[in-house]
Image (cartoon, rainbow, N blue to C red):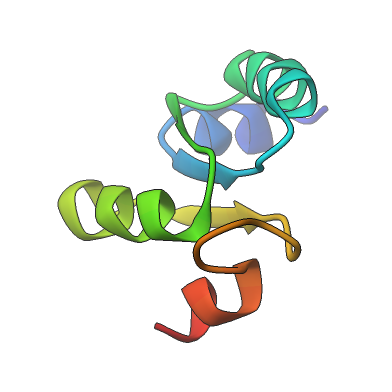
Length: 76
């Protein structure tokens, strides 16, 4: 990747919402090599609480999650 892009990515925080633990951990670990911080949530409700507290720069969300699905989470 271009040096400028990597430097920009290293300033960002990502909120990653995924209910499948194995998938979430694998993707979060991979993203962690490129960004400042990866916040993890196992459902839309938890993701919304983290969003309100931490105000991440980017949200990546699964659609089919328990309690509050990804679409409703992003709308909220």
